[in-house]
Amino acid sequence: MAKSKFEYVKSFETEDKLDPGHWIVIALHCQNYDRLCKVHGFKRPNDLRFTQLMEASAKSVMEDFKELVMGYGFLGEFNFVFPKSSSLYKRRGPKLLTNLCSLMASSSVHIWPCYFRSVSLCCPPVIEGAIHLFPDDQSLRDYMTQRQLTCHHHNLFNTVFWALVLKVGLSPEDATILLNGKREGEQNEILFSKCNINYNTEDDVFKKGSIILRTTIQMAVTTPNGLTAQRNQSRVITMYTDFIKDNFWKEIFILEQHTKVNAKTNYLKDFERKPKLLPHSWVVVRIDGKGFHKFSERHNFSKPNDNRSIELMNKAALEVMQKFPDIVLSYGQSDEYSFVIDRYSKMMDRRGNKIMSNIVSLFAATYVYNWHNVFGNTTLEYSPAFDARVVLYPNNSCLCDYLSWRQADCHINNMYNTCFWMLVQVGNKSRKEAEERLRGTFAKDKRAILLSDFGLDYDVEDAMYRKGTVMFRQNPRGIGAASSQLAASKLEHLSGNSQGNISSKATSIEKEEGHCITVVTEHTDMIGDQFWTQRPWILGLEQCAKPLDNFYD
Image (tube, rainbow, N blue to C red; front, top):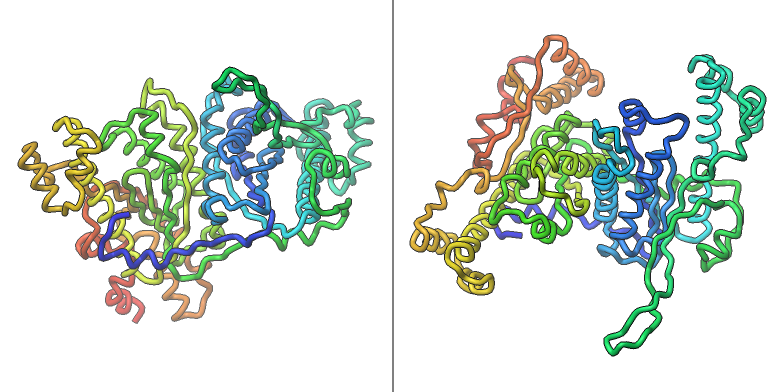
């Protein structure tokens, strides 16, 4: 990244590496699954189209991440397994989690028409992720067995419930009352006696879930000298079988250590990583495109800037801000976006993995969802992925310097790219020649090249390219969400009341009075004090402490 005086803020970033020698399981859950069912009229109790969509999306993830050895899913959930020996991304948890999460979300939107031909996608999926670390083979087997048992119990209940509603004619309320407290055997009896359905004959894909395995097969290939040779080739397959029995673990997915059937799985919850972010700190979630240089080349993006790509990124960012009101500001440039969450927010109980995965999955899904509206007839060749990280900044000064750093990076990179592509496209230089011409140059040198060689004044270039895109919440009363939270914090300090109660009251007052906090989009300078002094509500009441003190005095 570009060098600037604000680079010290990088010291707040952490690696978050996962312990070596552990199985890594990335558990993904479609957070808005019930809404997708209702809005798109899914068949009950199971919709084969959605199951096939999830399987195909999971296969896309498995094919893109070659180190994944297994996946398992049902309904809106999928679990992906990295081996104990994996060193992908040097085992940085957030990078693994968010890449898988975003690709799963973008793939499901991309291939939706293949399975729901007559049903248009009305709302993109939001996927929440978690990381589990298992130290031995037994705990991995227990976890996968637990998920399959959960699949079975959910499916049995749903099968009985919807049979009572659709076949017997009970209301949903009466069916719920009838099934309340019923055990597995009793549910089976109700299903058979009242609905004439034998659960054992139901489709295994719904009873047992989808298992996706990476296997190695031998393929005949022709060598350069014309001979035929056998080569090992990785292949992803789908099966529907039992995790509970020994056969799977001894013959299909062979484990090194001895394992057995274990009925006690309550201990597994302790293996989930649940990092909780420190309170009263600014939370920044920064999203970056994965391999976007290749992505932009494949889709023929205009150089040095593609307005369509910028518009698409901005649409995705706006959707994220509308979905998560605790985000007070976002800043985007190139293939990255930073989302600033109010420092006093209790969003998702300040669970870092939940926050990251929800934001990055919605961003990726919305990016693909809006592709054809922005790129028209340009076909999306493959699903994009994004990684994300969470960084905490302790005060306003550090947060402002972080945003200044990102905007300085935008300016430096855009000036270089503008100069480089002018040399290539207008100056007829090769890419290598353009690189040589710009090597070791400073900003003043690039400005001189643009002005003398091409008659281009860099300062009159579109501010969207030079400064990036800033989105923030504007309140007609001049008080934003952040300052409401800060006011609540100060009230708590003065009165001893619960911050959460006061915050909710402040929010409800805004709604009752009909005030709507809209999102404003600008391409303006955030380096320096002017941006912040003109918009004091963004950082909150720390910038206007005197009026607040007078108010409370």
